Length: 320
Image (cartoon, rainbow, N blue to C red; front, side, top):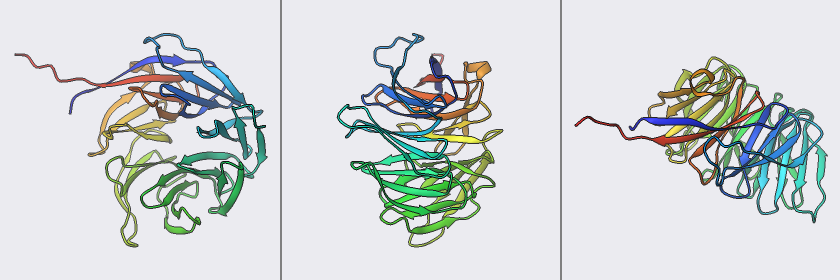
């Protein structure tokens, strides 16, 4: 494999609190961030020179900390989840008023979009499906007595994978939320993040407050899910997982202030990005996003900044 070269090209500032959410923006080369200041900001990398200071555009705000975010391009709407369990429908077109709903009893830790599906994950252990046109809840399930933290939609299997603070991972039928399997005690602590394997659709990754990175293989025809690999990937909580567009790499973001890059085939560590060597974050790294239409990924942190990283594979130089 060619050596992987990752370098910092921008550090974006403007938020006044920890940044918890990053999602793709309306156009290629753009993305949105949301933070503890309640601000939702749009950023554009289009036409930007390396190292250039970039200014974000404040496009919406709410009165409390935003933990989760989704953008719905069909209706040009933002859906934001807050620390108190609120779900905010923020319509960027002026022909419809915003809706601010007190829905979950505790924080809304996830707003997840997959096709025409939108779900929210609550600190109350409830998963809710929403009608995105009517902007109203359709059905809810009390899945756990602890917080739901993360979810991944598996389109081919028509199911959701959901990670919870009760240490379990759940497989739910997409049509009625029925539980197909509970992967009990999947981790030693809260399951904070899940990510499908980019090349093998019967495998997925999980990360947790226990700092372990695990690889799972889903069972066929009712067979239980099997653990394939487990390793201590960071010193502290793994907050987020992200795969590269080419499927070669898995990125992990951690409370230990680092980002680590792994080979998706061998599960071996390739590179660590930190503050001292790479100009990385000085506090917990909370979220990662591959910016559509670019060779960049972005990382968001408790240090109130977003770092944009350029990723290239350089050929080995041989002496002739």
